[in-house]
Amino acid sequence: MEPKPRSSCPTTCIVSKERRRKCLRITQSILEEQPLPFPVETRKPLSRIFYWTMMMLLLLLGLILTSMYVYRYFSYTFPNQYGLEDQEQEMLCQLFYVDELREQLELHENVRIYLGENYEQISIPMPHFGESDPADIIHDFQRGLTAYLDISLDKCYVIELNTTTVMPPQSFWELLVNVKKGAYLPQTYMIQEEMIVTEHVTDVDQLGFYIYALCRDKEIYRLKRRTARRHIHRRAAETCHHIRHFENTFVVDTAICQKL
Image 1: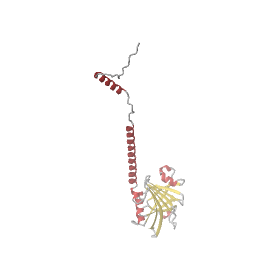
Image 2 (image 1 turned 180 degrees about the horizontal axis):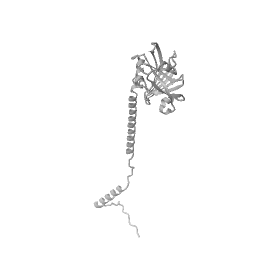
Image 3 (image 1 turned 90 degrees about the horizontal axis):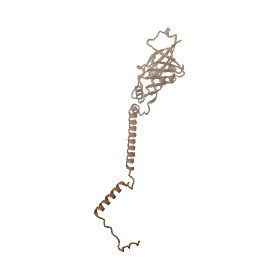
Image 4 (image 1 turned 90 degrees about the vertical axis):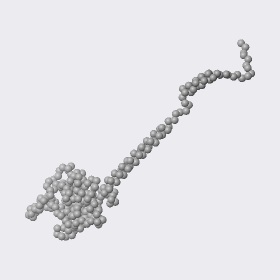
């Protein structure tokens, strides 16, 4: 076969309008079926979720801190008005009082008040003239009990709390603060009360944690208040030990008596 001669002029293709439209439609359909050459942008939604999560965590943390601040403010309103920071308050008391013989005496005691636990602890050192025994006293308002630890005898005595002579912790602390400031001076008279030993306490669970901690490893006895004074010849058959303490606007002389 002889080869066809090449033309010296360039060849031109003449495409009709109908074929051109058809080619455009085919091209568009191919482009729609093919995936996009660039990746879909997915970072913006993830970053938005991260930012919203962080904002919610910060808001929750702010609410928690605000709640803690409000709770501490209202919980410590009473102590903070005196410049105190803790619910365990301690004060050393010193006052003068007149006893039954019209003699002026001096009383020292260390008072610890626990406002949150609602109990008081009073420590009485050895007096100068021996008119009272050194003792530790706890008034537990939750249990409704009072415990006397006579340090000289190394014995504990428990009785029901007398709310007529013992002020509650908050009122007692307010009284002590006013006395310390000089805004109020308590009456310096003394009242007397007598108690008799009734029985030995074996069930220490009913005493509560604070009294048990005070009387641990001690002999514990239950007391009963004596309403009327006995005659002299009857009282000669018993021995009494006195504890003088201050937890109100007056001094209390507590006589703990036991039969010989």
